Amino acid sequence: MSQQTVSRYDPHADWYVEHTGAWDSAAADVLPSDLAGQRILDQACGWGQLSRILAERGARVSGVDLSENLVGHARELEAAAPLGIEYLVGDATTTSWWDGEPYDQVVCNMALMDIDDLPGALSAAAAVVAPGGLFTLTVFHPCFPGRADDPDTLPSWPPDRGYAAEGWWTTGRSGVRGHVGANHRMLSTYLNAVLAAGFELVAVGEEAGELPRIFWARGRRRG
View 1 (tube, rainbow, N blue to C red):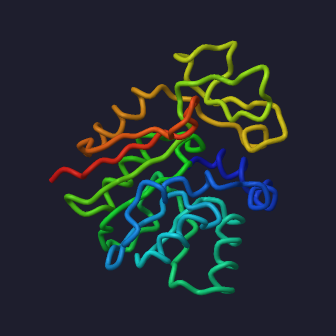
View 2 (cartoon, rainbow, N blue to C red):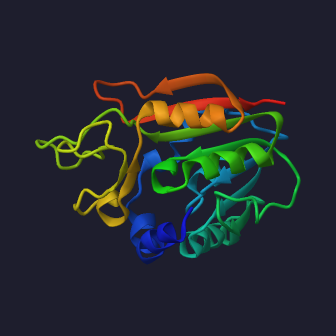
């Protein structure tokens, strides 16, 4: 993440913890229920909702996030109900925080929209996961705009700009994207970046429903 991302999230950490919902652990729905023996990195872990689910499934989990305030919330939860999770304050677009021991899997859950440096984040994931290891990402589905008749939607892009107009924007509303904004990217941008980082694509999926809000993809590190 960039220093700009820190300034977006740190002032809103308390609000974010209070208001984030089930989608904040969306990757749990597409990961195995038994993760015993797996060393997993929760990349851009926020306040650790997904980290705790992975640990409860038997994984040995580390979480890294650039927001010191969000990591503070995660550490408070860990102290209150220990699951053996290690939380690190660090830039998820680099490996400066990494101890050098490869991970079996890396998960980046509902965070790439918040990260300015997409290639950096994916390159870091490829660097810390073992050859043949898996990388799973979840994002708000990038193909759908906001709806004027539904102010509670969490759209990927503003209707007046168009799908191909990538970049950071904010809804200007009271929700998460009104507080911290988001980077809109086309679906092809995400998938091509995964391939360019050294992963081969093994699966993609979309949330069921009339208008899917979540898109996920999984890659296996080549080598």
